[in-house]
Amino acid sequence: MSTVLERRTATRPPQQSVANVDVRRERGTALRILGAAAILVVGAVHLEQYFGVHFRVVPVIGPLFLLNFIGSLVIAAGLLLPLRRLHALFALGGIGIGVVSFTFLELSEHGGIFGFQDYGYRAAIVVALAAEAAAAVLLAAYLLLRR
Figure 1 (cartoon, one colour):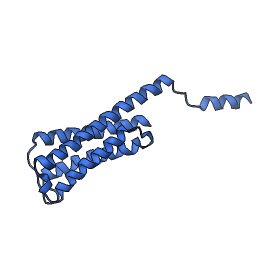
Figure 2: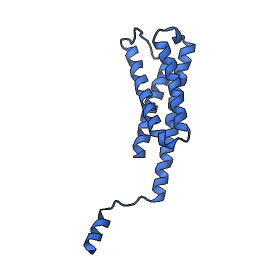
Figure 3: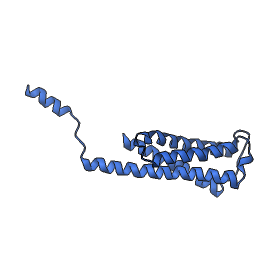
Figure 4: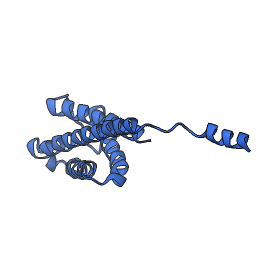
């Protein structure tokens, strides 16, 4: 009987200390907030380009810029609000916005997309690329830390 009890207790995983769980939670919160900030920057750049550079008159691309801003705003709000059960879903959405925006920008620079070709890496493009990459990395790290 005692060997059965010993085997059961020996196969149990070691319990994490409360301090370790708190540190992971704090790191996860920081990654989530930084990821939300990066997504807000992505949306802000797209909104500025929509109005400031007149992308609103470009067919297909203009509405996509506006949708990028709206989606970024919704995802960042979801990441910042206390909707703990939905944070992983919003993080996946943020990764999606970052990766898709980055990819479409590179496609528009190197051959065109939807009949539109952009040119040159002006400041807004550099900021957008950095924010998109940061959002994807930060939110992926957040999801990995949650496991």
